[in-house]
Length: 434
Figure 1 (cartoon, rainbow, N blue to C red):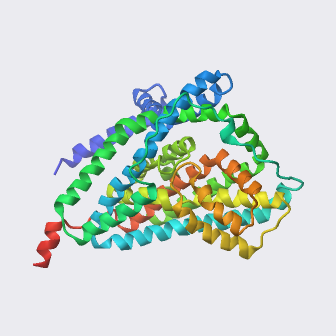
Figure 2 (cartoon, rainbow, N blue to C red):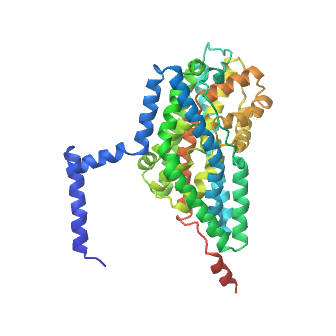
Figure 3 (cartoon, rainbow, N blue to C red):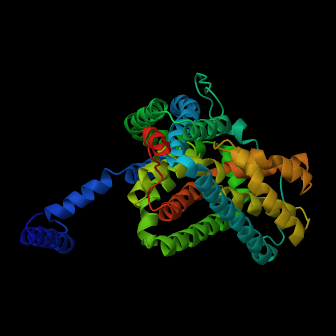
């Protein structure tokens, strides 16, 4: 063991440096802290968002189309890569769970579904309390076609994924569970190596390009006139939705902090890069790499994060639930229709199940919900078009709440699992049966 006096000296030295950096902003240690922040992904994403919005006011159309082309290429690559990512992370994670795979899958799914349903009921309570006053005298107008107002790229390159997101999720479950039932060190080693390769692509290619991708998204969004018209129509509901998702995140992290003993404010701060990334990508699946790295900063182990984050990117849709409920009931209220408590609760419960089929891409949740909007709430084709336009126009805030909430769920599962989801190796399991 090391000399305790030496350890005390080192600790005291670090404390002194910390105090000096706080008292003197020009101190080298303070400068290093500022440099770390400016080099962080969060800082780069925030700058990309701000610069993208500013440039949208004066960029010529041809320049916007250049970024629309680059965004299309990168977005198509993400669409190709995300199913591979989900399979590569979840399959070995389930295999490492061993015979406890079903247990932790059930626990994580129950927490995610409970969070989603709570969000929907919270949103319904908000509509009952606020809409009679907030939307008094408001009426719906014809939906603007957002795609029609969008900038067209100079060219497109199709990058078809090897399989769909839901297929990747189901395949990961089947392969992962099979590896727990049939001992095979070589297959498990191959799955772990595939995971390492995928993480290398994430760290060296996807994350460095994300700020440029997000800049292009906000640039082209700002240059879309129909998008601005749709947002202005539902501005009041948008403000309520943003505040509601933030309150939801506060509740989630207060509960996660109480269960895990982690400072909820610090935990939420660590998840800000994921929140900011989701604001730009509007995709839970595309934000998986950042959500994964942010969860590790909250003390979640790699085995837990590798299992929970990709899974919750598909099944945890609390933010999307809040947005759909708020906007759907706003459309009905502004159309002079009413919603009973029983119908609202039934709609929320069914929507929580239906949205699991959403592919984790921009607009996926609302497309999965169209059937319920027409069958349970009686939406007309015009109302469905308006709902889709309003949702897609501001899809990013719900997605940001989804992925940030995934971090809270990862903390809770990590606490329940004591940070260890790994099972004994196949040779150890075989030896134990002899």
